[in-house]
Image (cartoon, rainbow, N blue to C red; front, side, top):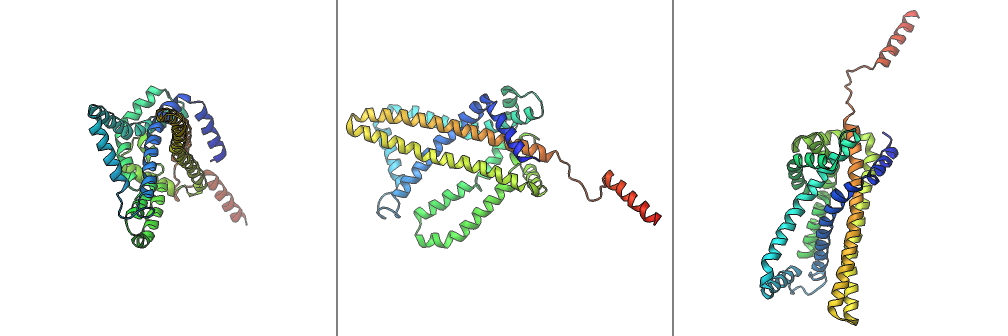
Length: 328
């Protein structure tokens, strides 16, 4: 396997599929980036208001958030029902669409790689067919994901005494290492589910076997992990940058002009930054899907050779050696 050619081909294919980037990269990235911004902003202020940095007897940031929402709804009763409906719709779309988008994108990439019809409609149709098992797998694996564990560690650090955190730290390190190992072994599970139509458990088993039987491609896996790492770094930077830009710009303008003007300009700047970050993440997502799909198709198409099988060249060489010994 030529790693450089594979990644180069994946990048060219990504650049040639703008519709794929927009529909199955950019749009789901808006959802995930928005939630990421909200969650990391909450983590920041929760730490700032935690006993580590503030009064231990003070109220938690979560308490302040709930109190603010309750006061807002009491003040604007007429907006309660529309906001609840919008929140429910957003939550449903956030839970379902990114998984559907990934399944559809993988279908399109794999079919195009194999010279099959690969329109958006075809990808979406087959993506829907593989959506439920893929969604089930994502719910299962999210419990063991690296970031889920990190946020749980931060929760313990923020809410429990520091001594207890130090006692639990070795266990957290072991759990994180196990999480990274699981992520490596299960790296092809999505593709067995989407491309081959396998069940969740069978896909996990086959993914683990494919990783074990292709140890020589560890370097490629490292490159792919690096690609995903770059995406995470970019997203993290943008996630921290967007709220900071909004707060700084709106705060500055509010001090020199009207507060409403500051909020409007801050909202516009934040929306532009969100769109740019989501589009960048969408490109990296589709590129990552393409590289992984190409790798999966190539590795899974190689038949494993049993030790009992003999190659024709080996048979000929064996016969030649036998004749030479006989003549001697």
